[in-house]
Amino acid sequence: MTRFLLAGAAALGMMTTAAMAQSSGRTTSTEETTTTTSVPSAPTTVSRTSTTGQAVLPDGDQTAVTGASLRDYNGNKTETTITNTSYPLSNMITSAKKTTTVVNGVATEVVTTTTTHPPQTMLAPTVETTTRTYVAGTK
Image 1 (tube, rainbow, N blue to C red):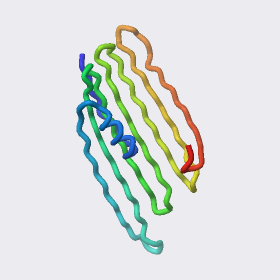
Image 2 (cartoon, rainbow, N blue to C red):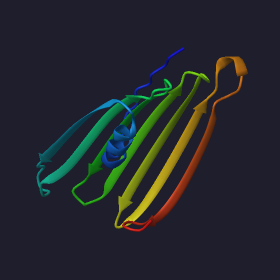
Image 3 (cartoon, helix red, strand yellow):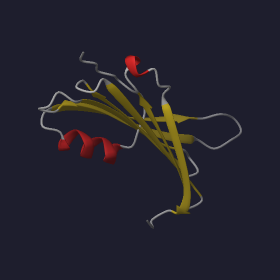
Image 4 (cartoon, one colour):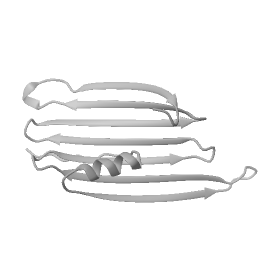
C-alpha cells in the first residue's frame, strides 16, 4: 500500500537539501514580511519564510518535507522542519520534527522522531525526543 503524508513547518536550508537529494521532486517557496504599528510602540516587523517539497525514490519510498522560518523584531529566530517518509515495502512511516529557536545568540534544538509500525505487528508507535543547546554559529 502506498502512502504519502504531507506535513507542516520547517527550515529553508534543510528543505532545499532534502528535496534536491531525491531522485524526482517538486519544491515551492513563499516569503512574506508584515509590518504593523501599534500606539505607542515602535513598528514591529516579522519575517516568515516557508518551503515545501516532495519526492518519490525509485524503490517507492515517498518523502514530504515542510519548513518554516520566523524572525521577530528582536532578532529572535525559530526554524521548524517536518519530514514524513513512508516505506511501502515495510508499511512503516517515519515522521521527524526539528525545531531550532535562537534567542540572544543561544540556540535550542529539539528533534522528535516518531516511527509508526505496520498494523499487523500490533506495536505502538515509538517516539524519541532529543534536546541540545549551543551558542549560535557553532556546531
